Amino acid sequence: MHYLVFIVVLLSLVGCGTVSASPTAITSAASPTELLLFEGERAMTHAEAQCEIGPRPAGSEALLTTRAYIEEAVTAAGWTVVRQDGEFMGVPIHNVIAVKGEGVPRMVGAHFDTRPVADQDATTPGEPIIGANDGASGVAVLLELARTLEIPEGRQVQLAFFDAEDRGNLEGWPFSVGARMVAENLPVERPEAMVLLDMIGDAQLDIFRENNSDIALNDTLFAIAAELGYDENGFYNRNKWTITDDHLPFIEQGIPAVDLIDFDYPYWHTTEDTCDKLSAESLSKVGRVIEVWLEKESFISLLPLVS
Image (cartoon, rainbow, N blue to C red; front, side, top):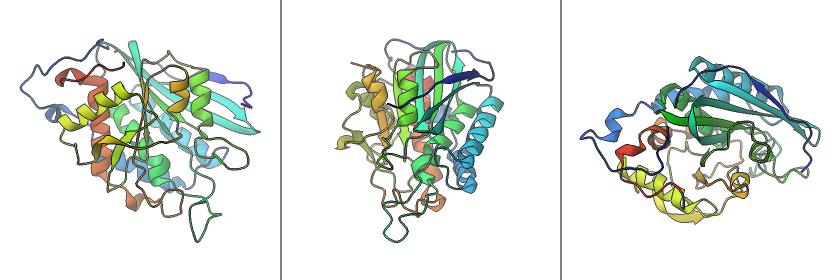
């Protein structure tokens, strides 16, 4: 790959954290949903804010504006911000990772760039996309998690915001340039597992198992979704898609990773991928599954995290 120098910058510092080697059975009479803090409406405001910035392709001023928005939100919530800056084919790449807690790390990621052209659009294929679902939705969930997470002792959480995912197959670019930079040159501690959130805000949420994803980690996530009442209601515990996405560079580095993605989305890579296609309910479902995985897994009887 045509990477140039990486610059890692530590911007702020806070945290406390824990991970248990294996999940345990329910020990409280309370339902997990009664204890969750993630709010889909708040996540929606983050999606809308990104859409208001406009198209956010790698190398653009709009992407830098988005990075500043992300960093301001996570810093206000008490997270440490780590920047990883580099270059690919003459274009600057800017990854951001927010870190909180001390202990065994788990990473949740999303890309914050948007596709430079709407190449799947029959009428305006040369126009850039807003990327409400394909870009803003995953970032919105991560930013709401930054506000709500109560990280247990002995755990670290890494919220990774990847640049340069969505320029693949254009002008010789591959997909997942930013995520590959992170996976191959980790600027933070090596995570025990990574979950990618991509295109997860569609009002008609249909998340199936992705074929490249780690089986045991998928078992855990879909078990959480079922416990929260989302089985066949946003989450469908069967395989469907094989996706080239930001989870693959982590799998290649031996890190178990899952792509949570709703690829049944007719507005993908078109100018119609706008915020009116999203729903707070969909963002809430995904956010709450991740909230449980990161901090309240002990409330649920689950399969082992990884094989």
